[in-house]
Image (cartoon, rainbow, N blue to C red; front, side, top):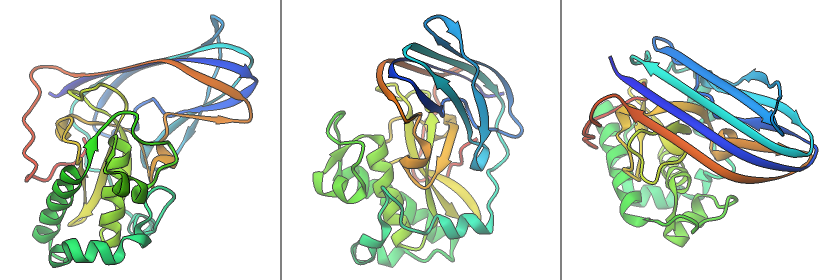
Amino acid sequence: MLTRDVSAHLDIDVTAATTLEFQIAVAEHPGVQLEESLSFRLDGAPVQAREVRGAHGTRIHVLGAGVGSLRADYSATLRGRAVPAPVTDYDTSVYLRPSRYAEADKFFGFAAAEFGDLADTAASGASEKLLENVASWVGARLSYVPGSSDPIDGAVDTLLAGAGVCRDYSHLVVAMLRALGVPARLVAVYAPGCEPMDFHAVAEALVGGVWRVVDATCLAPRSTLVRIATGRDAADTAFLDNHGGAVTLGDTTVTAVVDGPLPADDLSEPVSIS
């Protein structure tokens, strides 16, 4: 039975009272045994958070925070593999649309010129080959450089800059796939084996009625990923959102390990988040 242990620790300096939203708890994984703990403390005193259920099992924890030092701690152990993520008619519609950071409408001509001969989404084999080619193309086109991008950069900015981090790689993958007629979305994950260790972002694409992982960074084995939040792009999956006040994010520590050796990852093989 696959066992994964994940955790996140965040220190936040609240300088003006605010409402915060956290997406650090793992999403619902039907078929997986989950043990977890989540706590928030403001200047050492417990703060109660309200859980809001989002799309695709995403859990958002909302709390009001006064001025002070806020500490968020989360840990979880997952045993087993989840059943495949379901697919709805809404998914096939919304994840073809351009979004804030994945501007697919700006890539139609470019994507067709680069990958048009593989863009037959009606055939499962051709589509899986397309995913492999897009991931390889993005991986070769970009350099992984922490600090090289801004939080407001979209896929076009990333392509022009030629560098970025995982969210930037994933935005470019998502934009290219949508431009080719493949529903695609962003997933925030815990990623055993990821180096440097942090919250990780990957793309998911719909192939043959199944959501498949596309990770152009190749930083972690896809078969060990743990879903946190799923959405159109990073606007839907951020681990922290601030509404109304002023905060400074301090120390952030993320861990993700798997029981036993990390599995090999054959990029030519289709993998789903489980």
